[in-house]
Length: 319
Image (cartoon, one colour):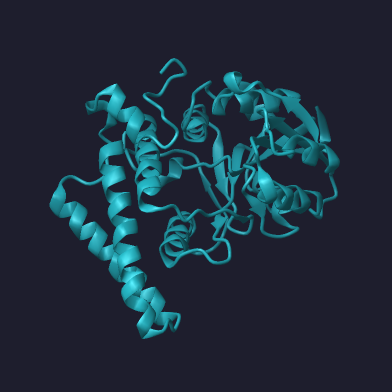
């Protein structure tokens, strides 16, 4: 480990063209410190491993059957050369050449900062639903647009416990005390909870954005949201919605806000009926997925696996 080095670590499996964009953006960062680029490849068959090597990355081979979100990131932490390790996913592309500098500045906000994360920025062509969701989520962490430091979180649903390793940086000295848990998902949420409980602070850097957004079809979105809501329930104790009336009112509110955004952006009136239908399907799928996911403990394991986008039956590696 070298104090003057910062590592960018990326788990990869068939990253495609977005991985190429991400690697290029990482190599283009403006930084006084030496950059160590580290990739964990889990058996890519699309040339991602060679692409990473051509970009100057050190590549660790992780057999697909041995990959786990928490365990593989611990492996990357052990192999990293830097005193700070910034994590991306293969489809999270730094939005500018100051991304890494801004993340690292988060550690200067206080001596006890162990984690720093930044926002997701919607990609060009993202739907109004996704654009508004991302803006609402990340604006909630810093309504005044300034960096924020949190040292503890409250009860279920408290967003002060949020962290993402699709755009987050970890101080090695904090990780030595509080490593990732070797779990199949929600490893970043678990890490944030454990870090805060151990007395470390977490910082949010609004200027450290990455391009990272997905427009899933309704069926995929329901299953993705099922996984997200189950993670929030299992890690933070959060339950979404309480019944059909609350669900319907929530969908209605989101659809109303989507249509208001389109009107404010000057969308043609003729395009609005189709947009309305997409918005209803999107938020309906999200609401159902969240309701089921936050109550996954009450569902049979077979149904949990079918509802999960990644076919997960449970929280631990054996499920």
